[in-house]
Figure 1 (cartoon, rainbow, N blue to C red):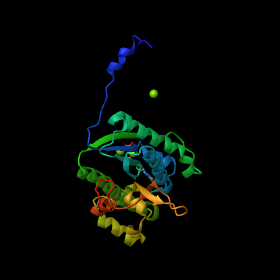
Figure 2 (figure 1 turned 90 degrees about the vertical axis):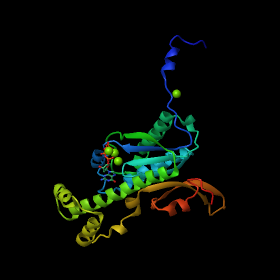
Figure 3 (figure 1 turned 120 degrees about the vertical axis):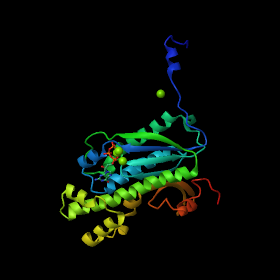
Figure 4 (figure 1 turned 180 degrees about the vertical axis):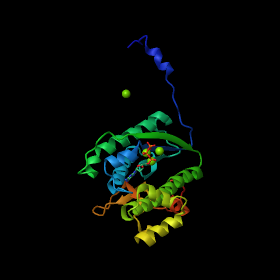
Length: 253
Ligand code: DGT
Ligand code: MG
Ligand code: MG
Ligand code: MG
Ligand code: MG
């Protein structure tokens, strides 16, 4: 077909290509989930169904894009880590970011009713997305450690805050004041001495977030192996996580 006289407008398009040989991280985060979680009666401070739905939507994304080697999620956010050498969409940033975000968001809606049997979706959930490049393995590990440390700090705060409000009868403002300036050890102590809660015994998913990894598993019936996406709730800040899962950074063991 002959080119139309309009076709020149394509030359206005730009192509944002991501630097080669760098880890690509796409992080999505729910928009105004403070409100969204209230409107949909999420349990405080953690709603297991809401977190399971986030994990499900991330698994759909990881199953679709094989160059994602690890995902990390907590609260209303998920990070997707693509291999350094990925050539997915020629490393075009907008393609990678929008496909991941859109598949995640669509899956969140698609699977909503599996996780919330009683609660109808009241409005479409939306997620923002960003792409970050990390040139070294150390940078990538520090990024993931930063997100997991954030999970821990927020979860300890929220667990103590909601214990003071829901079990201790304080108002939100009183609980906030009580916690202002406290250290982690103070919060652990409040939980233990006032509410009989040992923070260490809280569910690992709440304390550590969720890591999705690809693992080869054997079917016990016919012995065939296949690669599946599995959730882990472990400390990824320590070296031994990376030693046990040496395939992520491509360290030959
Ligand atoms: P943003 O991201 O700037 O549009 O604003 P938000 O409101 O999404 O803020 P963000 O992302 O910093 O914090 C996540 C919010 O989502 C936070 O207010 C707590 C809420 N949230 C996340 N997971 C849960 C949950 O399992 N239970 C409850 N009750 N709330 C949750
Ligand atoms: Mg948010
Ligand atoms: Mg925010
Ligand atoms: Mg968030
Ligand atoms: Mg098209």
